[in-house]
Image (cartoon, rainbow, N blue to C red; front, side):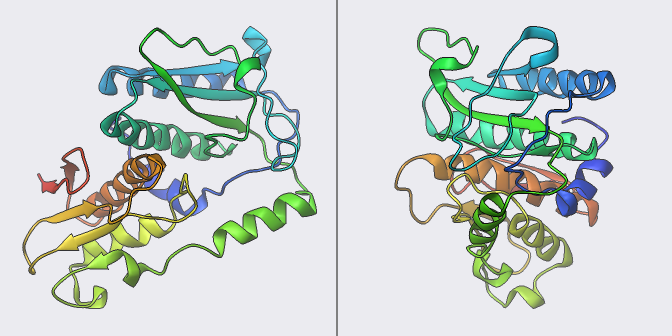
Length: 255
């Protein structure tokens, strides 16, 4: 993982799902930072993340006008084989890009279906799947009413922290790093807007593992990767650095 994680932890509190972008181009500094983060994601995951920037390569992302306003000046395409671990890695590494963009003052959003795939410049090698895009840009100063309403409706679905912890005690009595990790998960975006991941601890002092009680259409695995990253960053900031095993029921391994 990128060694500078302090900014990513702070970005968890600041990140919002942006659904209205203005037309400002990204600064050269922002493009450089994002290119570096995208390259790290590719190197570590073995997947294909690509940063598309209109100002330099003419790439445009056509988002559904029913869900979004404006057109972002950049986006990240997420490509890889079609299996649950790949989707989880896309969530984990893609969300790291999202948080880095948040550090830079940019807005972002996870988009799986409400965009025109045929008009993107994303190349999909044989045997791969075009999974998601992450639009990036400056949020509109005054978000249109429709997009404000959509965001408010999605936020209303966010689960309370206690709903995400299944342990031998209440969440209030769990270790501080566990509470911090789950609080960070509550602030995470959800590809299916349902936050389906729960964190299970069989006994105090036993490992925490991330579970998906219900899988209906596969996007839950993307949410699993997003949730694991938020948990890992927050737990590490509370003195419990570690890393996750991949997969549903994967264990958080303390360093």
